[in-house]
Amino acid sequence: MAKWCNCLLGMGSLAIVAAAVTMLAAGSAKSADAPAAIAAGAEKVNVKDGATMVYVPAGEFTMGSKDNEGDEGEHPQRKVTLDAFYIYKTEVTVAQYRRFCTATKREMPPEPAWKWTEDRPIVNVTWSDANDYAQWAGAALPTEAQWEKAARGTDGRLYAWGNKWAEDTSVHSVGKTAPVGSCPKGASPYGALDMTGNVWEWCADWYDPDYYATSPLVNPPGPKTGTTRVLRGGSWGFNVPEFFRVTYRNRCSPQCKYGDYGFRCVYVEPAKP
Picture 1 (cartoon, rainbow, N blue to C red):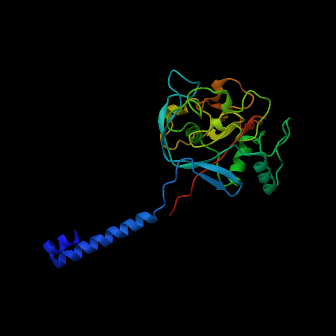
Picture 2: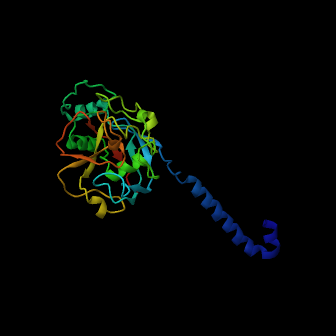
Picture 3: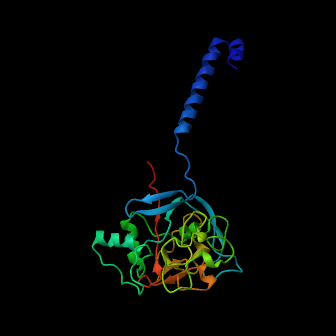
């Protein structure tokens, strides 16, 4: 190619070609230096509390249930677009919450009947307890949309693992919590564990049964006000598959404090200047 240019274009044109080649080389070098896209499910550790987080890429997913399926407040089903975020791979544990209490000089919640075990999810926390922890950890409680996408992925599945109920995919129908991550077969498409069962998980949103009909289709933040907060995912004490669908919306007063209420956090990378 260089010889052909030399013969037909002359030396002046050669200088132009050389400059173009230099520009292409510089562009290639710049591309090589650009950060690679983060893979779905890639893990990152929150140094504040030691929690492992999994990456949920930006993009669209199906939220809610079809018209002939689901329960109150799960309609209409629609396409929602979210920015990228990380979500904790498991629920916040007793050990992690204890670290928070020590750092902030607050008391642990009431101990459940099965006593505190460090690798089990924290329970008996109110919405405010969960939100305070999230802020301390430099994170946040997930919005309903973030929680649902992290649980079901982009293919509209009914459960974190697929469309058919399976007994060995979650902690359910038992008398207490289990260590987090006890059912790896129930992992979500991004590798999040215990999105179904073990404990109900507080979300950031107020509950409104009609919110889906009017909510934004990009990064819906949840209603501005309400009387109850949303919980997702089912818990150890339930045995009805209906409650474990990733679209199911439980709710309770923010002051509720039960032995099957816990939470996990989300983290969003700060925007680069």
